[in-house]
Image 1 (tube, rainbow, N blue to C red):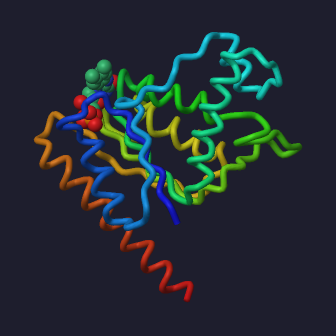
Image 2: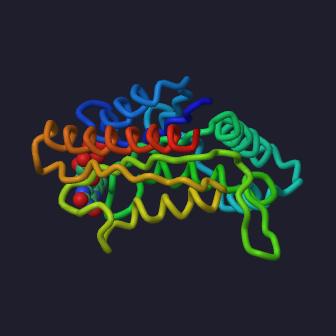
Length: 201
Ligand SMILES: Cc1cc2nc3c(=O)[nH]c(=O)nc-3n(C[C@H](O)[C@H](O)[C@H](O)COP(=O)(O)O)c2cc1C
């Protein structure tokens, strides 16, 4: 049981999303693979390579091969995980560009998802995702929030059936209030999943 933790806030210090994801993985108590998209940005792709990676083209062009190798590594991190934790800073109502880049690397036809007669089917094997979204004034889950709803869609597209949201929004409040509010949501969520396990037994 391994967690893949993705960080995407441009703030390495005083980031609400980073603080909350740290608390979450500590509470989950599983081994963690951390992929920090800000400390270690992914290489940018040319238009041709973006199309090539998406379609898993067999072309031997060296730049495409390099990007495919990065993509394989990122998808492998997903395959090793049963839990995905996404740390997200809302930027201009959407997700950080760093995170969008990761999505473009991992959503691969025939590798992380496939097309079937009943629509796309995710192939990553990840069971659950926790999406921690930090914002300023935009309420998480509102019509203006194109970050958390989009990420839920991507998670489901990759085959993740259980998706939980943690609201770390409202950075106009004190960081302590945002953190306490997010912590309470995590504690309630994890308590609930413990109860579910007990009931199943
Ligand atoms: C480039 C940029 C764009 C932002 N856009 C929004 C936005 O559209 N809505 C919002 O509520 N907050 C916005 N914010 C504020 C951040 O979402 C907020 O500071 C949040 O706490 C960032 O996450 P972090 O604390 O993990 O760094 C923006 C901040 C930056 C730097």
